[in-house]
Image (cartoon, rainbow, N blue to C red):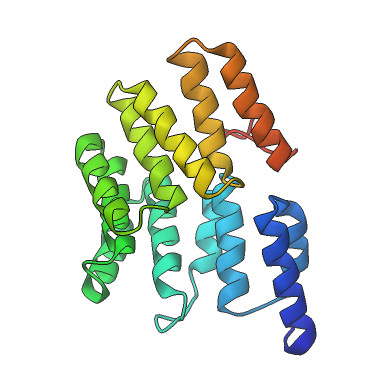
Length: 212
């Protein structure tokens, strides 16, 4: 479906997505084809923890796609999460061949390092990407996760707070903030507050393991 109606539905989906209404955003995108609807569907599925669905969305995009780099980063993240290391390395090589010094490429390198347990190197790369793009909420969130894994929970919470300030609708930052507060800092009240904020953004929010 295209034309004026398709454009209006895509704009509606973007608005729903920004407001944290993922299910309604997907409903607005139903039947729409093209680069932007495909990328939006992939991002919604990825943030909801539906990695294979996200990967399926971006699998057939043209290499000349106007949204190539964010889509490729999303695809690489999906491949890492699904344990498909060889395919992830191929995707990284494709990103590096085109924009080796871009924040997206540096972030992608960090994702790959994180997936193989090289958390210090991943943190270094995330920091390097943030030096170029300091308000990138997903990168701030991933850096917070690396701080947690290196035994620095207070630094992790600080990065999650920066991510939430940059993008108040980013569910992953709110979820992980609650995890660190509860399990690492023994702050049950703070964790509940973080998760209440998550549910305010998305009442249907679930943990990555599918639990609500």
